[in-house]
Amino acid sequence: MDSFKALTVETLPRRLGEVTVVADRVGADTSTWKVREVGDGNLNLVFIVEGPVGAVVVKQALPYVRLVGDSWPLPLKRSFFEYHALTRQEARAGVGTVPKIYHFDHAQALIVMEYLEPHIILRKALIQGRQLPRVGRDLGLFMARTLFRGSDLSMETRQRKADVALFADNAELCDITENLVFSDPYFDAKLNRHTSPQLDPVVAQLRADRDLKVEAQRLKHAFAANAETLLHGDLHTGSIMVTEEDTRMIDPEFAFYGPMAFDVGMALANFWMSYFSQRGHEEGSSRESVRDYLLGTVVEAWSVFRTEFSHLWRTERTGILYQKSLFEDQGDVLASEQALDQVLHALFQDMLGFAGIECHRRILGLAHNADFETIEDADLRASCESKALRFGRHIVVNRRQIHSIEEVNALARLIEKE
Ligand code: SR1
Ligand code: MG
Image 1 (cartoon, rainbow, N blue to C red):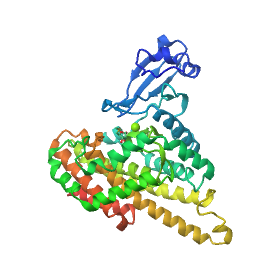
Image 2 (tube, rainbow, N blue to C red):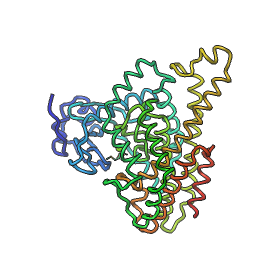
Image 3 (cartoon, protein in one colour):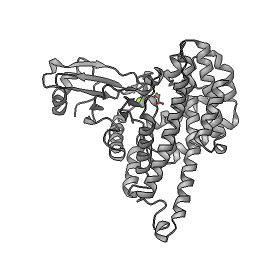
Image 4 (cartoon, helix red, strand yellow):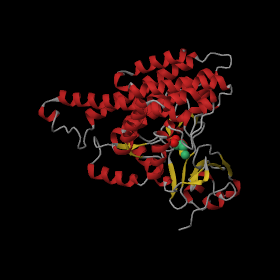
């Protein structure tokens, strides 16, 4: 087995030209290949390889965190987890919800996959003020199908336990989330940064907020201890590629078995952050309709998620939890509906908690969002960020008193107008 070597634009054709499936997709004569490195994420190399026959994407893990450098080593095995997560997501959510995989090389930590064109990253589209009509529905379906079908509500339990054990080895990526998401934002951690000194007073207030810190740790406890389903693990708007007609979820290298509400909370938080950032992108023309679109998309994603999850509950509940033999087979359909309501209610509350935490870490922690970072005017940026921080605090701490997604959006509108 060849030892790992990071690819470059120059070495890639030689290294992949002999892989039949790649040559078939791009063209056999590697001298005709055009290779670009386009990775702008925090961790990996990403190449687009184009040739006379077609194009592919090559994603390769590096043995360290790209954003920070080789002072922060990170295992290559994350590529193995990404590959296995993509295959499970495609099986559970359907062909066309994730990129097609053409080739996986374990030793080189690389995945050759479908080049999605003319797709762009959803976050970039939202910063431009584009309103993608399919994304709420597609995201809601994807989350319901992957989260339900990866859980003990659906899977054969021995197989699920084996899978939990397999993904438990993605511990270093979980460690990143456990620290960067749940703890660092709430104290003066070394890797923290916030770009606007104007935020100093609100940051100090959050870090002194006992209720918030206790809730953040309760949510961290759920993240670390509740191996409920196979999560994407990093489902934000930078992990979604879109056109007007198509939506694909990418980048599940943080995949592991955790609480269902984590993916949903992280995804919706990024729409709410986009909402609070829009004021910073108005440049003379109002973004009111974009703001309405974003809150509408949140409602759609959540209600499609709920409806599809409920449908799967009623039609595919083949696992060890809430067995039909206890409920429907005894003629007690209402018991099954009561249990479903309770599961969805708990999921909604935890979703709000995870969403609020995600808002905080993207403004105060190491890994920020371009939604805010690309606002040049420092005062305007700080005002947008401060609203998102206050919104986040409210939905974390008061999540048990909030009963509908419309209530959350009404709160967002109130804070946005302040
Ligand atoms: C050091 S990695 C920082 C962040 O980038 C990834 O996309 C995840 O969101 C992670 O938290
Ligand atoms: Mg990523």
